Image (tube, rainbow, N blue to C red; front, side):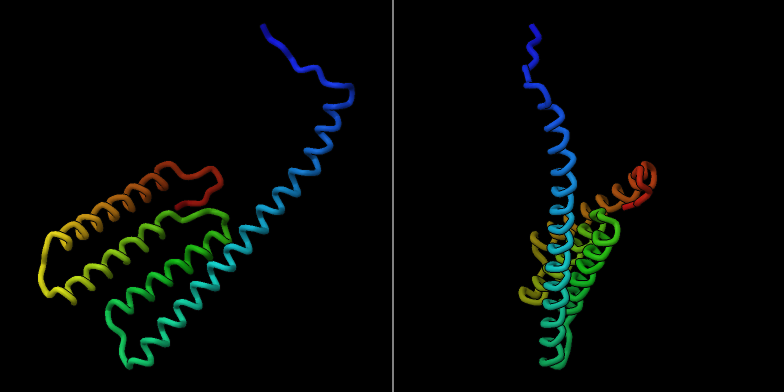
Length: 152
């Protein structure tokens, strides 16, 4: 039994008129939110990188952990820039950030404990899994490119 809702005459025209007006306004608000959020993330990244750099300058040297932190900020900035230009999230950059962060953790553990243990091995395996995930993403984007021509 197929029951169609009974609409008053002209209701579908009213729905069409409302949709013609609300869809572009909704799309505008979503676009504005994306732009404002991207500017906020970009500004926070620049600010954090500046504070980290000034901290390195004030102590007179930069450790490898400090440099890796700057690379993380660079990768986040590149992600924001790519997303701003293409409206496409570059998954590979998230993987690069994760690899750099885990590498930074390994260096911190080695510097504080001065010994190798299972946690360092597990973090190394984590980096291997992330590198394999990056290879899969690169292969998939090469073999099956997106319809709009943006490769990941």
